[in-house]
Amino acid sequence: MHRRVPVRLVAPLLLAGLVVAGCATNVDGPDAAPDATTSTTAAPAGPTYPLTGLPSDDEARRTRPALVVKIDNNEGARPPVGINQADVVYEEEIEAGFTRFAAVFHSQDADPVGPIRSARISDVELLANLDRPLLAWSGANPVTAGAIRSADLVDVGFDAETDEYQRADNRPAPSNLFATTTGLYAHQGDARFAPALFEYDAPDATATTTTAAVDASATTAAAGGATPVAGGRVGFRSRDIAYVWDPGRAAWIRFQDGTPYADDHDELVAPTNVVFLYIDYVCCPTVPGTPEAQTIGEGDAAVFVDGRFVDARWSRPTPADVWNLTDKATGQPVRLTPGRTWVELANPATGSFVDQAEADQLLAAAAQPLSQELGPPEFG
Image 1 (cartoon, one colour):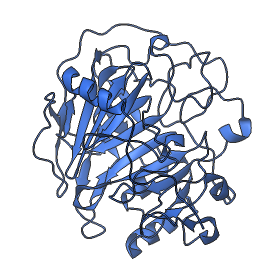
Image 2 (image 1 turned 60 degrees about the vertical axis):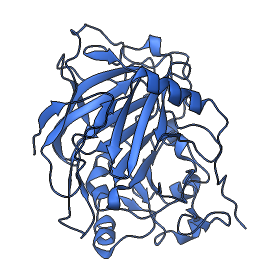
Image 3 (image 1 turned 90 degrees about the vertical axis):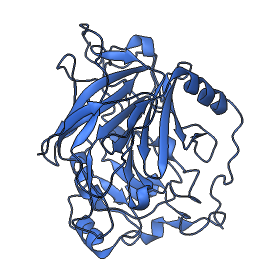
């Protein structure tokens, strides 16, 4: 287990010193939060999906395994396909400071989904707390491929289930490989039920199983040391990622390099919750040139929920453990709002707030018609 010494989070400027090579030991520590307030949370009235906390009336879907799909985020790969149907999305740093997604599907299907690209050695530990999920991937170096094939997961990658994959005619290679979650789930084998990765507040009685957000006024998820904020930003060496609170959607609109981020149907990526987990990336004990995310241990976290920020700690003692988020101000667990969650596996000292003036500009840009070079994939 490794511990980190917090440093102050400066808003709204990005902090300098983004490091991948080497094991950093400092982590963002935002300004002191307001005095804590006390809240109570009622238990959910009925069954909920484990990865969203939203109500579920579909037992077969609720008790199925998680399916993780490695989705490209490089030039030529955007817009992603099916990513708005994922319950949880991890963004992890790869070579040269670029990023890749590990999209966790469970309560919804995405047909098609992609573009599907290669896995990384970090995925083995990262996904171990999903209790034997399915993993869809295409290619990896021999060391990583061997580690994945011997890991406690069900391999539904391209080599294992080639017939479930198709190349799109209107997408550039190598970012043109797609599958369907329904097709991949047909090969679940001995995969096990998905656990809840986070704690959630009681869902709104009016929420539906396909709603991405719930009424922010109906939850006490961020009570305690929560501070109202316009948005949050995290920087990778080759990516600038910002999330801005949109009260109308009760969600955080994602921006990449200053541009609204959307799927192939021009639907904005706007998760209900955003979590920055400040971790170390070590270069490169297993695979030369590949940073490895250190997701076991503990560290600082920034949780964005209901238009507010919670200064938190994360802990995960073993690969099998789910994420524990604790409010620093109260010592109590941080409960997320039922809905979709995006998780940034962020380098230390790369976080900041988005001020209101910039947030207003970004929201105005998101309100304009989107112009995306590529649309939905086409198959011959």
